[in-house]
Length: 441
Image (tube, rainbow, N blue to C red):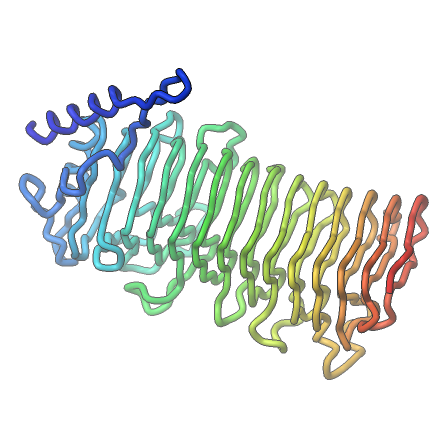
């Protein structure tokens, strides 16, 4: 009761605090950060969690969370320890912060399915919840049936203003899951993931497996992924369905061994941005932009491969037919087995990129890919290719322009590109109308 009264006093003080600027009043927002880091210590009375990795601490920790929720919010603190769970920790209230001591404090679920931590109600909206400096794991391998028995590290759905800061996640089909799969509503919004690691190594299991995706955005809008390291075995980051307004910034998606996809944009979501990031070693594509995606931007990033030999299907960026309003700008793309950029979309702008040593599958045998160009356009309309530099000893052409079966390449401008150190330079084999291919080297 004393803790609850102290927290209510802090809430009242925060509501009364104001800063007067130019005659206006700005009221300080209420969030989980307003509370002390010792509000609800899971090892202290009345909770008395063991944190020894042996005793089941589920009831003790959930009780601390429930008390924080009943008080209107607070910090549930995890001192150094390993906290064993037999079921999911549920946050369904507001202003609750789960805070640990980094890798020194871990919570692990003793089953191969379900979420370790679930934030939200699925249908309603919880607000201003946070997980900070906490390690999320499980002591058994995740269930391989990710359709009927999926596993999650942290699952956020039906929640707004959620922050995951400094979390380490291991052993799940989906490391961090945001939104409700198949949902078309905005019942999940404003989720920020930063300073985190979603990894295959270093957990309780010898080999962690992410058969789904390390981080997945199913639906909703207004998401930020920043300064995070992703080590995938299947997909690094998946943007699916009606998930919109996603900003991926300063994020690394890489594994020492080849995996399937780095970042995927599929479904009918729009306004997805990938900037200032590093992507390497995907088995198929470093970035895949599916046929329903709209307003996707990839900029100022390194898109490469750690091993030159790699796999025979590796492409830097693949833009499928039907994708629209895609911008690929100021990236460095190299060491792909096939194309550096392969576009079949509409309203595509490719500008200011440096493409070096792609189509390396031809390094030992030029006959490996007779139809691969470092920058290849097939079909589509309203395409601009400008101010790119392409150099490769292996490709057929630096830039290739073609129809795609019945889909002609129409309304395109190719100008101010330097292909003087690649293949046969620029090959314009498209039969569409309204085109300008000029002032290239």
